Length: 525
Figure: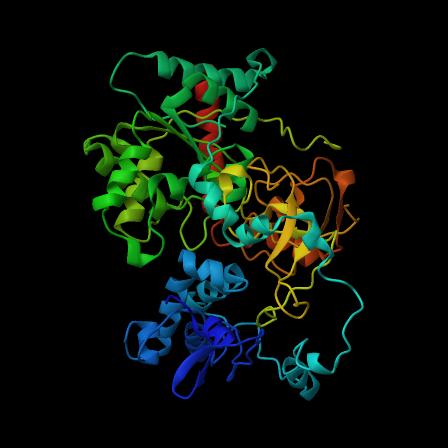
């Protein structure tokens, strides 16, 4: 039973020394709580109780941090590691912000932190103790008939709802053609296409790696290479936009330090099957690809093919994206000159071998004027716009960042709110999977890392009080097609000048200069 403490407390209770399931929904209130301030004196205790909440453990609490002595350093490191796992990112609310806090706590600074612990007023503490449904029994039942939506579906369909997606994923295949007119290419797109075509037509077994750049061009290259090409991206949303898969899924890349080992058995066989007949791997949104991850791509490519003398095991990589956008999470950018470990050094050296660059100067998207944690409750209504926050089925559009509109709520017979429904039927935009058989002017909040790779019709942008990661403001503002399609919250002059305060900015600027020089030499060759 792979459950964390919060899930367990919601589901089970002890009765006569036996575990029994709650008949109704339960929202546990968990104490103690500590400040998430990464520079505060209790940050180690904060990490301890976050691990106890969200990481599955057994027998004793110490199991949550590897049965080690619970020092602040150990607790912070284990919380950091857990937030990088797929389980942690699926079950910890606001995992990305929490990960940034851990990283900030591990940075050694000579000057004292400007953030101070906030003394909370009594009414704030009392507000935390309130839960939306704690007095549900005293609320008169609504006159609304919550079972009207059931008539739209057969009983068999209702029974299939909880497992419908998992069932369809097993036998659904996508056979799609990509319509691209290479005569419509810009000069730089045509140059990039010709480089790949020349490389593909070369009968020589000794081929150099490639680097180029975007969506329309990617589809043209895919049409050219056919089954010899695998199209991937660093995020689920970006992978869907180019009709590919995540690079982690294709290459079985490790997540967290616990997975940092060579592949064996069935996992290695699946990797070899994925790369069978594949000669080219396209990776989109490469700015979010870190040195350690790139080192593992090199290692696993060699392991899958047995060609240890060739970079990436003889496979050719095509990287597309913009280095100005968001850097990798919990890893150093590919261009950083000081790798953190041996695998990162391997990734840095592999990236440094790319010597062909095409710079697509015209942005086809932009055509304008040249709390400690979220409460485990979500309020929904028909017509509400919702966003998926996990890669449920990326190949058909059900990926992190996908938006849709709520259509129906399906409840068990004789059940109604606050009971959980059997299913919430959502119509997702751009969904292209199997079909299961009102839209209101609303908006939804998302963070820049979720928006990278998206093209939004309109956006109201608040870049925050500081540039905690280089590229955050740029990604947020560049999601719309024109300046007239966005509203930017007012900011101070100090906020504008903070754009150049990132510690990694110097490395990125040096990389931009290097890429510009390579682009000039490539186009003039």
